[in-house]
Image (cartoon, rainbow, N blue to C red; front, side):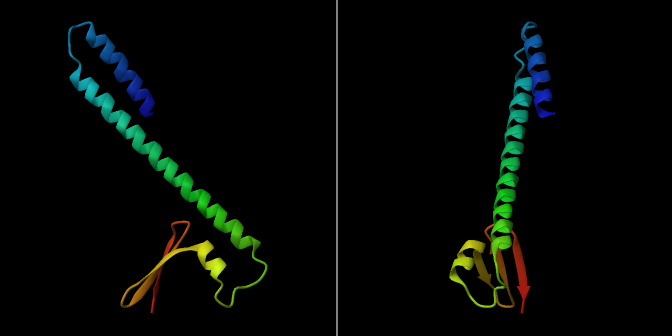
Length: 104
């Protein structure tokens, strides 16, 4: 969709070049759309990266052969990114990017 808009504006810009019009407005619109396209692509890559991390964690959890009942350093380092402690709650952030708030 953005690619189609860029192509259309580029064709319009070429058409206006013959009319001795500088096409500044069209050029700015094309740059704006290219930036928008770049932002969309970056967001898609971020979503894909998050999906990959979630899939890796699911695979790791499914491979566990027993129920965890005590602290295990290896599992903590594999699953958790960080834990933030506040006065009345704490937030657990998993490596997948998922955050859970736990109230005391």
